[in-house]
Length: 159
Image (tube, rainbow, N blue to C red; front, side):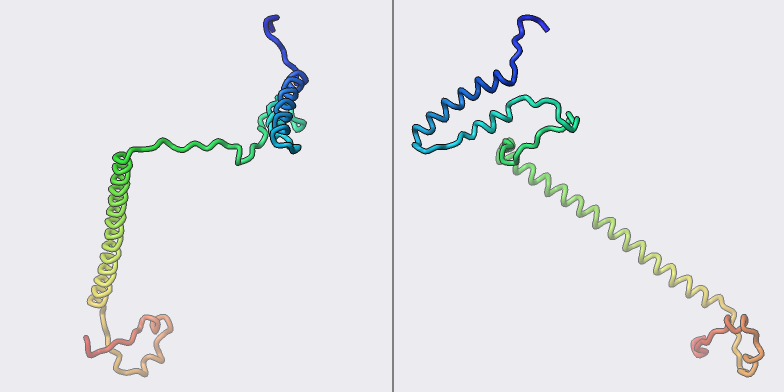
């Protein structure tokens, strides 16, 4: 630390600021003829540099009220730029809808193809079956259970 720098303590800041606040309070009281507490005291207390917190969490900042946050309005765009942005957005949405519709159509076509393939395989299985008509139903009582499971009832008129 060099000798040119002046070190200010919290007490000096308090004494200087409090005298300023007292002067402004006197002016406010004289104007309104009522005793009004100045809101500057709180803001002044917030300006005092804080020491190390008791918890030791030095990275934590003091919370601010939502109303104290300065809100900025975004940069105003010209009408032409807004119109161009809208058109771009519409174009993007159209493209995404088209892509989704295309995917949906592909999915549907795939399902339809699968159904057709299953139907064709069933028909081919029926064509390739070896059929033997059982005229004597008394034989069914002699057949083993495993063999009975393979036997199916069918309409003989279609064959």
